[in-house]
Image (tube, rainbow, N blue to C red; front, top):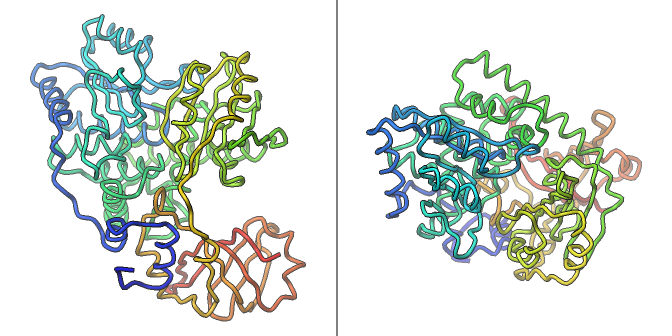
Length: 516
């Protein structure tokens, strides 16, 4: 390799098949770069400033996932700082569905808003865009989802218009460009929310995204941002990408998924500066996420079928807001493109998830004539189809092929002996963060771990302590206790991390597979 780095880091980089430019990015923090030379960005910023000069009101139309919520809060925060009168609205997932609707356009027009700015949606809202134009309104779209050929919105800021460094920005990432253009930098709210949006939408962790994640985490750890920090209770500082992905994103997403409270209240929560109010709302988010976890645990997986390259679950009783979570769980289990269809008023609403080397959107686009609605990107898609179309759709899936990039033998590359597991090596791995799409923190297989003790935690989990001071935990692994209790050495596969207790740092292996 071209870089002199720790052997464990070298193995992880090799497993991810990084090119030389990507290696340079993961081995050194990226610096902030000048804004891209983009006519779309310049024109959007000019239009916002014109609205300020002319006293026009702006309606920000957002989306109900983490990216859409954060992007909405960022843009509203910016407009208020620029003293531009604005409102915002995110539709109810169950009652209104995704994106800017004609009903919303009509209501916004009646309330005297001449300008709508869509964030994380709008690129395929052709009916709503046409209605707005007929009513004499102007709509700007800030979106990163796949564009429909020959139907590009007239006023658009999209990653495809930008240089390569910015080519994988999500909605929040695109709004961060607007913030930097109009205010010469981001404050803590915008930095932390851009980072959260990027991780929440599972964007590629290279280029501008890498800088946004690193900068947002730096600000969160150094300066704090209470609405996000309070959702990290139980996590150790310094917070990292894993903490955001597993402790913050599910709580923000749970509101849109369950539909039990108005998702617009989460935007207000992120903009709130009152400590008591933030603490109160955080408890609501925690409660909703616990309910989401309970409902997800109760999903009936018995109807899962494999058809061609796909894994499919059709469950008319499943709350449609949980379909994305279920698809992700299937993806993790089967390592194949996964689709979950939940019942809807029109028939079925589906969510799809794919591996980083695959393009699910391109594959499902071949079925587009069967869909009532369809959108997304390479790794995640959403669609809706009539009940009568379901058999034909399932049949067509069996004929679709999703080309995948060749992958190296991860197990061989990432298998080491316990004597190669050194604290300095795991510390070096931690410095490669952020991990995510394009640079995965793959599990290592550790052989010949010498057991010092094994015990059961909370009647469900197994925890090992090893003679070298490292630890391992297997969540839900209590059924293996009798098999392991008499073993002096074990081989375990899991993700390596660091834990600090009373100032002492140790290696922790979160077990995914055992040698049984």
